Image (cartoon, rainbow, N blue to C red; front, side, top):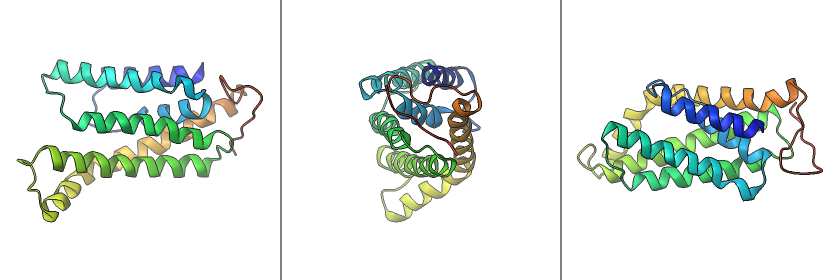
Length: 176
């Protein structure tokens, strides 16, 4: 149930709160869900975040471009990455995977901006470099938020002594 609660929190955050700060629980909720739920349910948070993206783009009057498909695949990969934390969710592992996932989004999403919007950055190596450099100011908040929320989300079951694995019988997990 906690995995669904964190997904709901992240969905509400995306829909209600401004994204300028880039300090969101999206990645943490995907990782936590993947670590706690059976694989047959991995589609649930991905579908919810796809719905959020479509709603937010429609509301803002933006087109849905091919780079969204890459983002949606990234959502699915992050739920899968959460599965890497199933049996050994230590603070170091959670922070490390969260950091690696943050970096993956930075590199993938900005590569897609460079590919999809040639009017913003020339399709040269210098243009790609400029695209990444322009994104650095947004990345700091993103990393801090991703790691902080991940550590907090994975700490909640320990702090409140909640059963370690929802939907997965017989296994135990630790967070130390």
